[in-house]
Image (cartoon, rainbow, N blue to C red; front, side):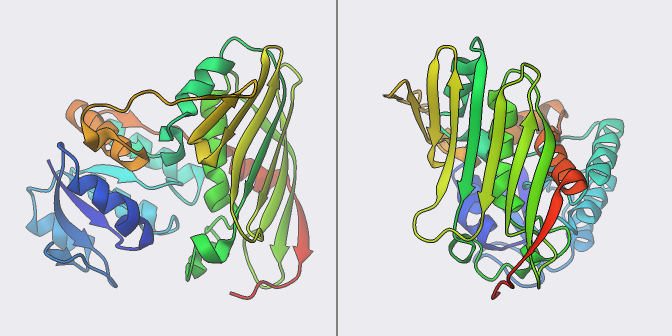
Amino acid sequence: MKIAIVGVGKIARDQHIPAIQNSLDWEFAATVSRHGSFEGIPSYTDLATLLSERPDIACVSLCMPPVPRYDYAMVALNAGRHVMLEKPPGASVAECIALETKARDAKLALYATWHSREAACVDLAREWLADKRLRRLSIAWCEDVRKWHPGQTWIWEAGGLGVFDPGINALSILTKILPVPVRVVAAELSFPENCETPIAATLNFGHPDGAEVTGTFDFRQLGDETWSIAAETDGGNLILSEGGARLMVNGVERSPRVPDVNQAMSGEYPRLYANMAKLTNERRVDMDLSPLILVADAFLIGRRKIVEPFDK
């Protein structure tokens, strides 16, 4: 199936395009971007023009920042194309619901992707936690924003999510591995004086069985990043680290399952595109908004703390 990438930035070049090029399901057919292109691939500066001139392209993968994503997605759905959404799926919960309604009514595939859920050991962690009683769980998701988001000024603007742009990856894992849902009950969000989004945050979650669940997110960490989730249960302890790539259970490392013999399935983004192929063939919607709802609730009930300006 032919697919177009809309938004040719760092994440598209680093992850999406290689995944498509190595896929047995997809043909990389075009790009849409005002500022970038990919050598050897037809490029457009306007999505409507691509949709008009290329009826052979069945699907578009939207890789631009979240604020403009709704308008692009709706244009594509109105043109009868399937849509894949980079995380977060939109700038607000309401617009994501509207896209889901449109896709279901039109019987088109729509996929809110959460790439960290496809990390090597996330499913193993979920299976291990399934029959355990949780006592405590803590998230530590801290990194150097200059290393991982160079030049991405949109992340500091309203709708850019700030530290929750990577932090939502942790929440996507959390909402997958826990057998019961949690909710945000308290939050403190640290906003630099010169930014519209937080540079750091701490969250406290309510758990149905009273477990203590917390999260720490920070863009100001220097050196190596920390992407880990630690859980204490009645059956022992679990540490999911490196963004879900490594798992320790009671001090013993658990190896991920042997990758699919189809090497196109090896890795987070290749698995996302394999999932999208199934959704497209079956014209189904996968629009889990639980990570985005947790972020939205953190903004709704969180206490705002002003900190020193950030040198962008």
